[in-house]
Length: 80
Ligand SMILES: [Zn+2]
Image (cartoon, rainbow, N blue to C red; front, side, top):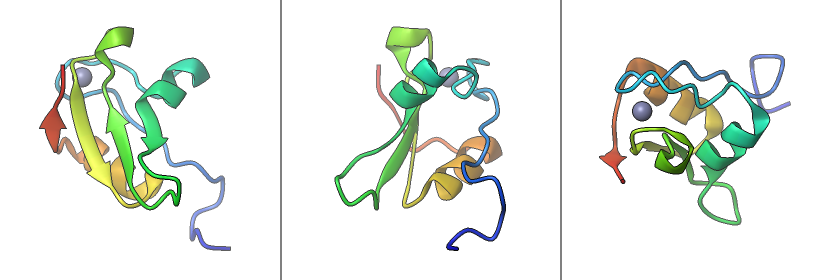
């Protein structure tokens, strides 16, 4: 067990910039929250503009890390 919390995937709140919900539906989640490399050591949460988001991106090393950054309102970059 690597995770201290039970239940696996961390939850993501609505985007602080545009109120888009990146976490609501699975087809949205997989286009917003995904690993950037094959080793799954880099992740991003992307407020995907093609789905109605604002382009805000948060980078991190794990899903838990990007969830924390995302929910804290951090922004690594904006890609539109
Ligand atoms: Zn957004």
